[in-house]
Length: 209
Image 1: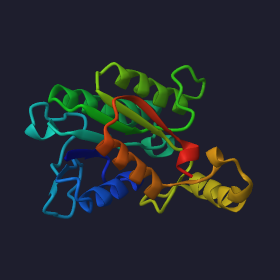
Image 2: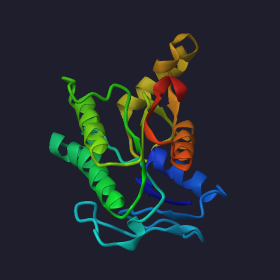
Image 3: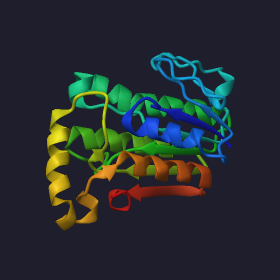
Image 4: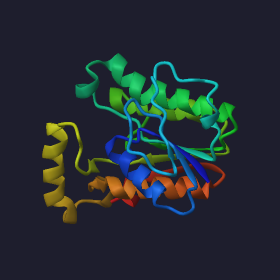
């Protein structure tokens, strides 16, 4: 299969990329990024501006898209910037890929995603899920992890503190509230993209613990 990975330099995305490049079922990987990626025989990594994606690029025509784009309010700096990364970019990628015939889309969303939520983060995640439902994919999958575990390139002190607490309490917490390892999320998303089951599907946080 031919797979497009958006967010291949992030915590979850880079695990998806590594797994896909090592998986014999995946013949070709497209990973549009803002910065160059190490060369690999199976990889095409066009450098792009996510605010001006090339609508006519032939590489949009893939069997499935895995979108692992995401940021935090702290990193984004404003609600508008956060919405651009977590809502506008995933939706733009979805529309372009679908326009080129891509039938499957897998999004790394979040536990608590709800377009009607009073919490801005959850509302944005819910809004993009609602928008993606209208694009028309044959197979649409939302992974909804809780706190994601793994070594990030960027400094997120609040997440680091929460990870330590949840790590200690993990054995007594309900599965839905346990840390979700980035490697597990990546593996489940890749399998969902390859399986491409018809309809809408959700991978819950308790399935990722």
